[in-house]
Length: 457
Image (cartoon, rainbow, N blue to C red; front, side, top):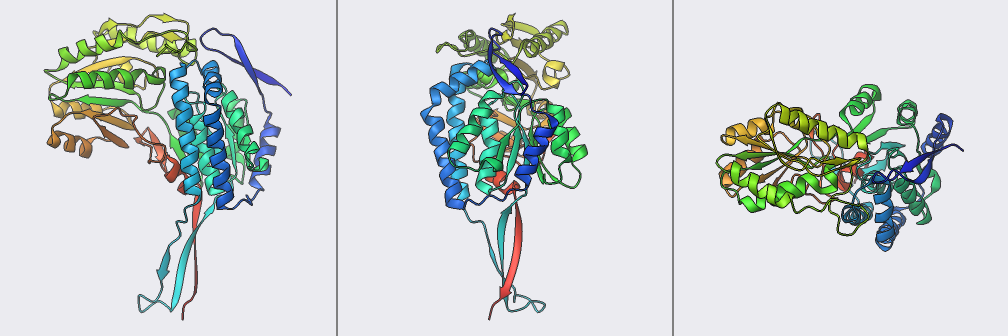
């Protein structure tokens, strides 16, 4: 069997290998899963999910270290990720036990009969899932745990940059008692695997998290099948004129730099109403200078690397372009290989590439605006619409933001990315298409509603 190497982004050393699956092997996995009907009842599926959650918690430290080695994320971030992934499996276990069926009287109109109708939710035949590199465990958990809860067979392709954690999770799920034929993780070339997934007759749902270009390709080729597409964001933190500056600075820095800024819900734009611009810039600068950037495996490190040197160089180049166009680099921006000291960039204009596109890294750009009208116009002025945050105590302004922001979620006095694993998650515009994610919504997306009726004397 051929394999490909996985390298530690901080040093470039090889940390593992993953199988390079052929088209034939991928097709065989899809064939097996598509022909499978999961025999485990609700209680048994919930028990599997609970056992996986317990194992994640029991092996938290080793698992966090493994995620760090393939992703370059610091241990603080990867330990947090293991906790979130355990939550996903526990929420899915709870959802596996829920019966969402409903009953309807059918003699409520002159055209009805003395019958009773009922609905049941049945799993789709096969789910094809593709996950990105930025959350090697939690992104995979959000695909496979709802599928197990629903009883839907699934074939999943993780990022070729971070496949090792997904393979660990596959083993853990099978060892917890889930049928091998109902879950397969296939690693290798994304284009080849995606071709096989989209061509397979048994696939009824394609669930993809990643870039807009691939998401559009999937939507174009999917045809008369269901899609769950989460395609990234360009999330604003709106700091209104009455905001607590210290709180806003803390949210801006933590929201922009957690996970090395590689989150679809990271703070990608800090939009501040004047006259708070100078005070907020100073507070952000003071907080950013305290960040500890270094070896991702060191306990004290707060900022690890980006996924690779190319990703870090792209952020560096966008910052440089913004400065060349008139923005001010207040601090940071130094790059060593895949590691980037978070750059704080003031006086950024909305048309600059740094904030016009999704910049997937720990940049902290400030856009100054005159008033709330301009803040909303700038916030809504990109092709993305995933999430947002607001820092204000003005109820009228907050209400207006909630009503007018063209996004999937709005968090008041929080970062855009705040959520639990059970709440609905997804965006509009280029940020997503189809059913939202989050455990509860995902389970529904992987099932269909069947209605049946019986005579009712």
